[in-house]
Each structure stands twice: as C-alpha cells, then as structure tokens.
Length: 249
Image 1 (cartoon, helix red, strand yellow):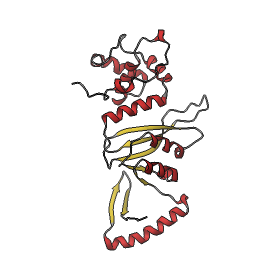
Image 2 (cartoon, rainbow, N blue to C red; image 1 turned 30 degrees about the vertical axis):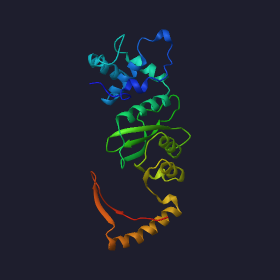
Image 3 (cartoon, rainbow, N blue to C red; image 1 turned 90 degrees about the vertical axis):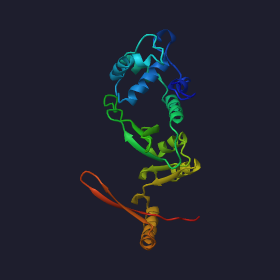
C-alpha cells in the first residue's frame, strides 16, 4: 500500500545533511537513518544490535530501500550518526512524527527531564547527559527532546523544547522545575494549557495558593467542586483531591 505524500521517513529526512566524504560512501544516508529508526522503534539500543536487526530484516527493508551494498556494519552506523547534526536530525524527526501523528485537542503532553544511563565519561571528566522530553500520554509517543547544557538546567531547556512543539489546545504538565513565568508564558503564547507542580521554595506564590486552596476546599465541600481519588503504588497509597475553580481576570 502506498503511503500518502510526506508520511514516509524518506520524505522527511531527504534534506538531512550528509557530511561524509563522497568517495567513502558505500551506503546511502537515508538507508542508514531508516534502518536505525526502525531498529530503535523495535527496542534496539546498540550499534551492534542495529546491524543485526538490519540483517534479520534485510528482505523486508529492500522493499523500500536501495541498500546497494547490503546492510551497513555497526561501525558505519556509529560513525555516520556521530557526524549528523543533532538539531537537523531532530527537525526531520519531528516533521515525520507530525505527519504520522495528529495531536488532538485536549491531548496531555508531559514534559520531564531524564538523565541518560551510561552517558557519563569519567576518563574525559564529562558528566551524564540530561535530556528534557515531551511525551504524548495517549499516543505513547515522544514528540521532541532537548539536551540540557552542562552549565544550565531544565528551566532554560524547556522553553526551547516548547518552541518546536505544536501544543495548541493541549494540556502540558511539568513538575515544579517548570513553575517559571517564562515557561508558562511560552505555553500560553502557543495556545496551550498547563498544569505545573508548585513547591514551597516558590515563597509567596506557594503561600497565596495554599491560602486560596483552603478557602476553596471549604467552599467545595458545600458546592461539590472537589474530586477525590486514591492512587495506589507498590508499597504506598496516596489519597489526592482536586479543587475545581474558575478565576475571572
């Protein structure tokens, strides 16, 4: 079955810059990228397994890839991806994701930071890589990622990630790190809604919300504007309540 225009990986990655020397190119860049993406989607997490995946699926891959010299070696995968511009790759990947995944109004997008396992380098005195990701909860799909610079933090990375996302009509959730004026402003400017955690280190803001919540809680007991639910984990049970209120500005 032929896919509609602009849905295939080939269409969305055709402008990705190939920085290899011409005479050393035994494999097409788009072939390498396509195999890598398919392999990672299937759970592959190393260059060696990526090569093994390609060889296992070679007959299927040849239905839509040229593969003039067969499947690239694991060393080829590693060398090629080391030379690809990360920002260019992300732009192409996001373009592809948008073409195959329609974000619906009301979609919950969870933004969170994670440290990549085994990404540190003690020999070169380099710390582990920290990434901020946007996760579409209903579609179980990462919509975008942004690396946190070594001398920075998630506060500066989150607005950069929001810039490349289409969040109009979506509900963005972030932990207390995202409780910053610039972050909520960037979400609002893209017509998104947000739920952000608030901790005591926010000083007056926390105090004001706490006082307002107490008043709303008592009012909610009368007006039935409180939703209660219990969240169970392995060795813990948390009872939570949500106060529903409307502020007019």
